[in-house]
Amino acid sequence: MIETRALVKSFGPQLILDGVDLRIESGESVVIIGRSGGGKSVLLKHLIGLLQPDSGSVTVDGEEISRMNERQLLRVREKFGMVFQGAALFDSMTVAENVAFPLERKGKYTAAEIDQRVSAALDMVDLPGTQKKKPAELSGGMRKRVGLARAIVYEPQIVIYDEPTTGLDPIMSDCIDQLIIRVRDQLKVTSVVVTHDMRSARRVGNHVMLLHERKIYVHGTPEEIFSSQDPIVRQFIDGVADLKETLI
Image (cartoon, rainbow, N blue to C red; front, side, top):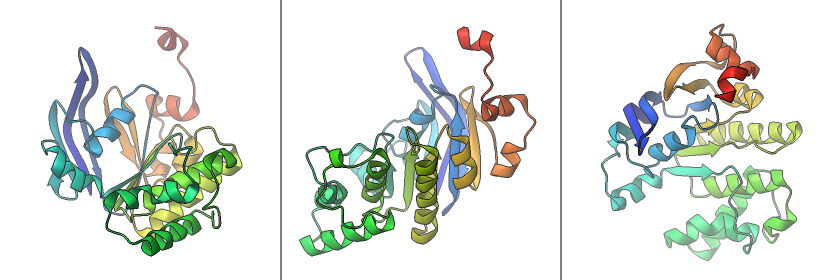
């Protein structure tokens, strides 16, 4: 479903990605982990065509997108749903209006069809009957779930999650993890999850990739990654800082 080959990206003199190779199969749930500022968000932006690589390629569903024009990219982006770290809801809109926003922009659905799709998406994330609420009336976990409902309302093939459990308590984090798994299994979508939450990474992924030193350093099943004795992998998973390195 998604593949990058020798992906390189710099901003001015700063090299961010240096030959990233990854492959994500259709229906797979892939978790990308790595240090803050290590290039994970930049990598995500390449996958959905918001950034173009300096060199290398990005292929989505059999199409090489890294040299597409904006009109072609708009068509490819319709394959994606995005769940943002802070939910990114419009405060002035109701829950229903937020979830319906992608459908309204398409301009090809009737009001009845939009209402039906919005209700189904909110049911999927266990928020029935919340259509008239405003984001300010919702807890942090509920806002995240509304963001997920908006991402799946137009039935994308791929859902990307940017730090979906950040700022949530362990119980709500587990709830979000279960919803990610539910969406993957019931809607048969391909999931790409960027997270620093190691419990979440172990639960939601059937494939884990560690982005380190601007490349995919290691990848494997959760069992393989979390049982690895590689010192770089262990340092990240165990959350053990190298103070000299941190202070440089």
